[in-house]
Image 1: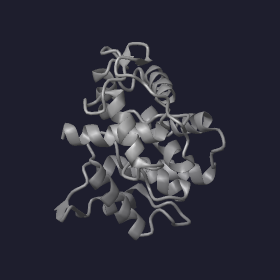
Image 2: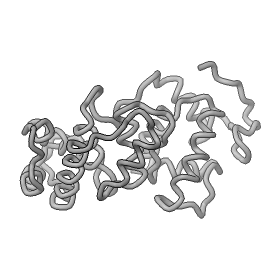
Image 3: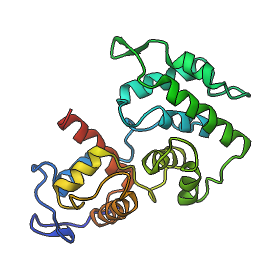
Length: 231
């Protein structure tokens, strides 16, 4: 996509000035990072071409209170044990036993934070998609179906959709993306997740379109860079 040229004082969307790429975290900064990134950002996703059960498990294991490194290690533990490919969905107790084992993260053994909670959610969710496979051809309807599962809100559901079908019709909005958007005036300070998810997502998608950066690239680099800046 050929990107429109903005002057620093230009508004990308109403109230959000483009700025300069050396000013963090202006739209110009995000556009420059997107140019360097290329077509894909891998840190935020499960392995390419994974079955839905594997994508679903990856996203259910992440989220609030679980850093990406621990998220990935827990997923790899289940994958190595064959729990995500089994014909019969493992019980909640089986998932809990696997998630209770120490995980190697950055050279250190760590414990997964929510083994019992996520084990129960995994069992129910994986059984549901096995027994009644969702229609994945329509991203928003697919997301709505995922949100019917226990423990899955709009952010996790959007993450599943993004991982599984690569859609730019949804945005993965967490505290890092919310902070970035609030700092540049894209999001009103009173907006909160998950309460205002739909309104925030609409603003984000309009911003990505105006900036001419794929939503799937923009939310991923915002998450990654803001995570580094505020870690």
